[in-house]
Image (tube, rainbow, N blue to C red; front, side, top):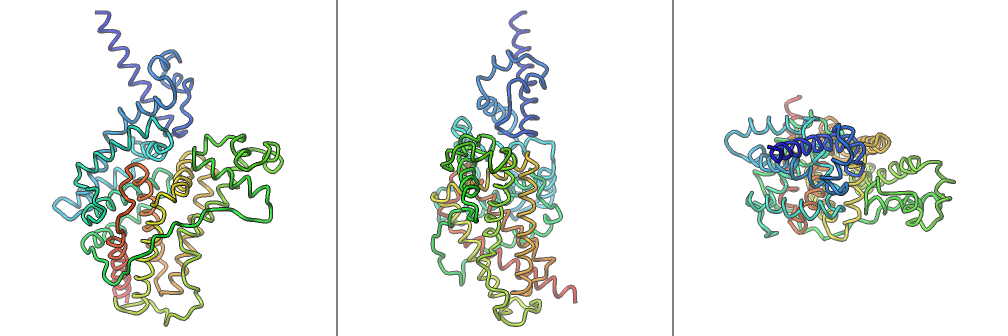
Amino acid sequence: MVPTRRRADAARNDDLLLDAALEILREKGPDRIAALDLARLAKLTTGAVYARYENNEEILVGLWQHRISGPMRTFFEAALPAISPGPGRDEAQAIMAKTISNPHGPLRPGVMLLIASARIPELQEMIIPEIQGWLREMGISDDRSDVASLQKLEIISFVLGCLYFAAADMFDFDDWETFIPLVHYALDHPSIENIANIPYVVPPSIVVTTDNEIRDALVNGAARVIARGGAERATTQRIARAAGLPPSALFYEYRTRQALFGDVAEKLLHLIFRRARAEDILPDPDQNLGDVRTPTDFNDPLLVSYRQFLAQLGTATTTGLLAPAAKEQRRLRLEFHLAAITDPVIKDALLKADTLATEHATNLLNSIFGIPKGLGAPMVRLPRLLVQGSLLLEEISASMNGRDLRYFQKPLADGFSHMIVNETLSNK
C-alpha cells in the first residue's frame, strides 16, 4: 500500500505545484516563477519543488503540458467555426467572446508562454512543433499561395490578437460587435482586384534619437536586450554592455532600473505606435483630396482612395514585420506587451502610446477621407489587433511569412467602406 500512497502524494503535489505556478505566471510573468514563491503558494517545501522541477524553464514546460496546451488547442480549433460561415456560428461566437473575456482561465497566462516561447529553448522545442501540428490538422497547408489556408490563419490571428490584448486589459469588448461582421465580409469576399503587387519592404529599425546621446544609447541598448531576452532578463549589466557604457552611466542618468524602463517604454512605444498608426505615412491632412464630407456611396472617390490606402498599408506593414529580417522588431513589440501584462509602468506607457496614436489616426482619417470618428477608432484598432495577432502566430508557428495578405486586407478595406456608407445612410 505504501507505493500507491506515495504515487497519490506525488500526483497531489504535482497538481498543487502546477496550480500555484499558473497563479504566479498570471501575476508575475514567465521569468519570475521562483522556487521559494512556488513552494509557499503550494504549501510545500522547496525540496518538493526541486524534486519535480530542475529550474524555471522546466516549470514552464510543465505548465504548458498540463495546464495550457489543451485549452489553447481548443481555443485555436474553436476559432474556425466561430468566425467562418456555417451553422452554429452565432453560438460559437458567443462562446469565443466569453472565452476571450475570461480573466481567470488558463488562456491569458498561456499568451505569456506563447510570447516567451521564441526565446526560451525548452518551450520553443515543444510549443512550435505542437502548434504547427494543430494547424496541419485544421487543414492549413504550407503552400503560401493557398488562399483558404491564409483565411484560416487570419481567423486565428484575429482571435489570438483579441486574446493578446485582453491579457493586458486593452481589449474593448464593445469593438467585438464591430469587428465580427468586418472579418466575415473579408472571408466571404477574397479578392485582390485593383490592388497591385506590393513590394517587400522591411520596416526601418526603431531607434530613439534625441539631444541626449547617453540616454539614447541606454534606451536603444535596453531595447536590444529586451527584444532578445525579455524585460525581466534585461539586467543593468546587460543594458550597459549593449549601450557601450559603464553601469555607472546608467545610474547617473536613471536612479533606478525601473526609471530607465519607464523611459524606454515611453520613447520606443511612441515610435512603434506612430508607425503602426501610419502617422508618418498618411497623406498630409492639408492635401486636397476633395470634399471631406462623409461618403455616402461605395464608389465615392474618397472611399476609393481610402480603400487603396488601407489595403496597401495593411499588406505592406504586416508583410514587412513578418519577414525574417524584422525578427528583432517583432520581438520588441511582443516583449513590451508581455511586460505590460504584469508591469504597471510599462502598461501605462503602452496605453498612453496606443491612445494617442489611435486618436491621431482617427482624426486624420476624418480630415482626409471624411470617415466619422465613431467609426474611425475601431477601424484603427482592428488592423492593430490583426497585425499583433499575426506577429505572434508567426513567432509560434512560422506559418504566416510569404502569404499574400492582399487577399484579406483588400476585402477588409471594402468591408470598412460598406460599413461607413451604411452607417452614414442609416443616420440620415
